[in-house]
Amino acid sequence: MSAGSPLNTATIVQTPAPPTKTRRRVEATVTAEQCRGSNGVVYDEEEGTSPVGSSSSTESHHHHTHNHHSFFIGFLSLRRFRLVWMLMMENRGQWTVTMARSLRSRIAILTLIFILAFVSSVLLFAFSGGGGGGRRSVGSHALDGSSSGLVMTVTGGKDSAQNVVSDAITTPIVPHKVPIPEIWQKPDNESYVQCITRPKNRRAPRRTDGYLLVHANGGLNQMRTGICDMVAAAKMMNATLVLPFLDNTSFWSDPSTFKDIFDWRHFTKVLKDDIDIVEYLPREYAAIEPAVIDPISWSKASYYRNVVAKTLKENKVVEFIHADSRMANNGIPPSIQRLRCRANYEALRYGKDIEDLSKDMISRLRRNNEPYLALHLRYEKDMLAFTGCNHSLTLEESMETEKMRYDNPRWKYKKINGTEQRLLGACPMTPREAALFLKAMGFPSTTTIYIAAGEIYGNGSMDPFYGEFPNVFTHSNLAMEEELEGIKPYQNRLAALDYMLAMESDVFVYTYDGNMAKAVQGHRRFEGFRKTISPDRYRFVKLVDRLDAGNITWEEFSSEVKRLHQNRVGSPSLRKPGGAPKTEENFYANPLPGCLCDKSQYQTGLNRFEGPSLRAHSLR
Image 1: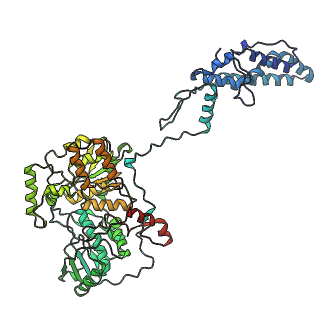
Image 2 (image 1 turned 180 degrees about the vertical axis):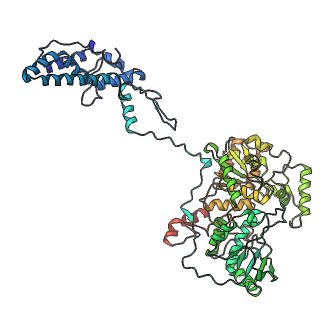
Image 3 (image 1 turned 90 degrees about the horizontal axis):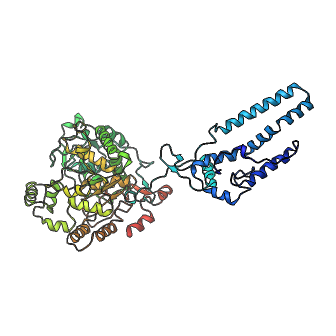
């Protein structure tokens, strides 16, 4: 009989003994069971786990299949009750007579019968496997997590089975947390936190010296950072800011107003303790001819506090015809730097229609909790015309972009050598180069990619990209036509949508450091240094040319690309000063120092803008 099978009491060998010596009877029964090693193993009653008798025959039963574990465990748990039951059955007559003689009472007899009936019913219930015990199988695929799909497999003999039962009762099943692949992991923020709160001991606001009218120029992101500078300028001039006018005459000819794109009420509410903001110029000032000024680019605070503020006091209304790049990146008072960040990261919020649609699109990209990458692929017609880059364009396409450059009076440089521009790293990546870059960095072909850009220029230029990464989305195929109805005709509103999806992506990669790249990467740094990869185009295009010429293998190419960009993933670093404002790192691309501070030193009131770990990192 198998060691895992239920025990049949009829097979137990009984040793003769005087009927009154019950203890001797029990010992004889146990001895008989120990001698019959092929039928079972007797376990110590105190522990219930370690055998006290065995033989060579019983060793063979230690490797029974898991289907018999339940019977074996049931046998062990009921062993004591079965022995008691046998003794009671065999001696029931003598016990009854003795009880009757000693008590000589019918009540005693009825009590004994009741006890026997109760014990019989309990044992019958136990033998039938009732109460959720006895015959529950514990084996392979026995413990299944109800939601996580976890499976615990049991192997080995009876000891293993009992251990699993014990663990299943006392130890909860914890779902295994799948680690995030390194390619998606965000860099360490080195304990840097946002620090843009207003000073507690700030002076009470003075009566306004006049009103500032602002014409923001350029594309959406150029206008966005320009508006933030104008908020700071209004503060330094002690001016009341009228809601800015947006550029309607740029390449996109978008008629959208400030209210069409931004939540203007939120804008005024957030900044109400910094400056006064009004929707329109008051009627009593409408008749005043404003003093028109084109602010000097990259100006310091003294320019606005002394020069422009004087004009405002005299004329009461000043109009700025440009707003982009009108304030220096560095050398600005800390309170003003923090105000620029409050305006950009807290006050300038897109309208509800744009916010809601962006959330829906992000949810679609993250189906099944998959991460997504946002790629700012700036291979658009206007950018190619502006930079003079024509790599991979046909002759006809190259001539078309050149004509566009010559026809635009705002663009100073007309004669440009596209080949030289590319080798200098001054051109946006082509779609093929972008695909090679992502593949070399280690992104799998199944990566979900959102193209945060306008229409990609060039006939069939995206084909090499789709060949490597087929899971590509844009606002056109991610949102329904009715959802885009109030947004699609307006390029600046589409740009706001792209901004949101780039901002919330798991990884952001830009192929050209234009205005959107600067604005988004700075915002992502401010929000906890979200992973942002900035390609070294100068070195990368040279590697591509070597790969195409067969001078290096793909493995060598990929290894070198990873090495070049291991420290270009958006980690904390001090903003790099330059010889000229145009060549130094942009404030909105990296608001450190100014709006991000070392947590420990910020709390203790020491140097809030630069920690020793960061300083050492910037020198490496």
